[in-house]
Length: 250
View 1 (spheres, rainbow, N blue to C red):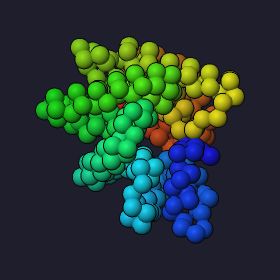
View 2 (tube, rainbow, N blue to C red):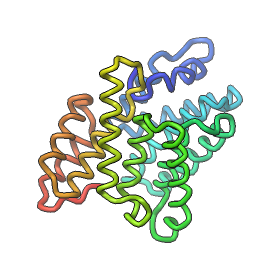
View 3 (cartoon, rainbow, N blue to C red):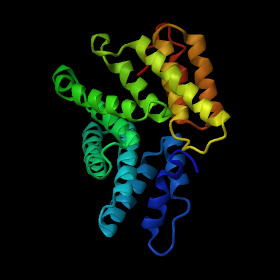
View 4 (spheres, rainbow, N blue to C red):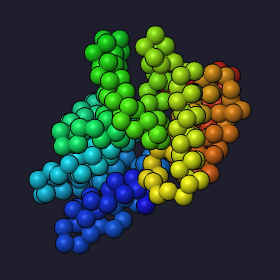
């Protein structure tokens, strides 16, 4: 079913009313892979309309937060104010979702990532960093073998100072575990949402590149593109930066 897997099945049904929108999850999938901000905006608006029409069920809250989070990444390059609003909106959706399901590991992990993405400097880091870390730790404790939780935790550790449990070495360790968890699930033939596997490969490549292992970083980027050949961020942003003498990837 693509990046969201079954997560957007409920949204597909509710968005359409009497006629299910069977391609909704696929549209989210495609928009994320190609970095299509306009498509993500349209999907965001559809989810908001569905929330208003259906009384904001918890399931749609998670889906709306996910789309806000992905769209915020696209806005980071063009509209910083919009990016900030989207991250706050995503956090609000997740808070509402977690009121109904307080130990939902993937929602806790996504909330930690959203809060972490709101950090813009030392002051906001002092306030938001502990909140992000607490949410991610709760997610890891609730689901230690969840690959999406591990991916979000590893990406967060890439930006967390070593003294607070982060750093490149810790991020590499966590992201390698995320990759192993994804591959283990695949080997066992279990059904799982696809979102996160490409992210795990990409973030592991980023961490390795920033540690100076450019050849291995390129291998992980190539593996990511083998899964999603049209992934714009990896193809058009990350790989070209490897050609720099000292690449400093996000």
